[in-house]
Image 1 (cartoon, rainbow, N blue to C red):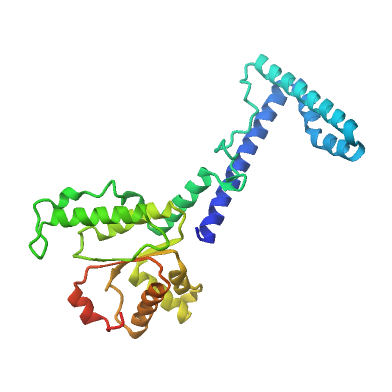
Image 2: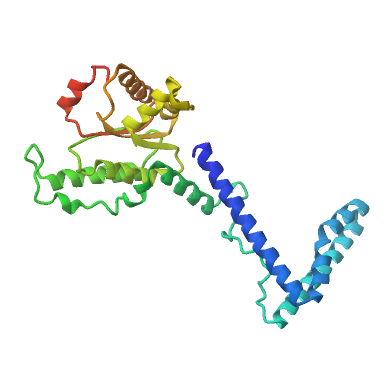
Length: 300
């Protein structure tokens, strides 16, 4: 599920789209009324449709109600055709007075029946990715350049291209087959080797599946948690709970956070709680395994 802030923003965008479409439609009616005065009487008559329907359902029953309804329907069709003929005679297209919604499938409501429309799904994924990191749109599997690793050797003397091709395929399969039961990933390697790019490529795919996720550097997330915990600089919120509860968590740059007891305890709580709750997590670091063992206690 997308988080509440993302959903609210998407719904607000749809509301603005509907309002803009209706305002444009009102302007078109004003233009028609100004240039074709006789059209005003027709639109006034059509605007009484709802009131006439209420009157029919209030005052008539059975076959008489059906008869009145059919008469009103026939009258409306006749009035609509007269209006179309008028605007055609004056050089306008037959659909000039239609409301031009951005999405023709759901009329910018976001739903078709009880099912989310594709326009709402796209908004939700676009907002999620925008909130994650500004550069996420450029970090996809399609833009990952494996040729960078050709003719290179790993620190263990192995073929770097073969290693990274295996890593790439693993991450790609992981992303497209992602579920709440997916495993976690720990990425270790020197800076500039593609860890963040692959993390973001996975994120781009998973976000479009509708999962709630968080991407951020470990140092920044822990700094926010510390400020909230000690009520520094007016910070409020519960970032720690969000990190623990989110469907998918991607933490970049393990080892860049300050080495303090609070930071280490917070990091342990995030990792341990998510492991216990079987929630998938990606953590990346530029540290070697030996450096990690030296820097962190055995719990981590």
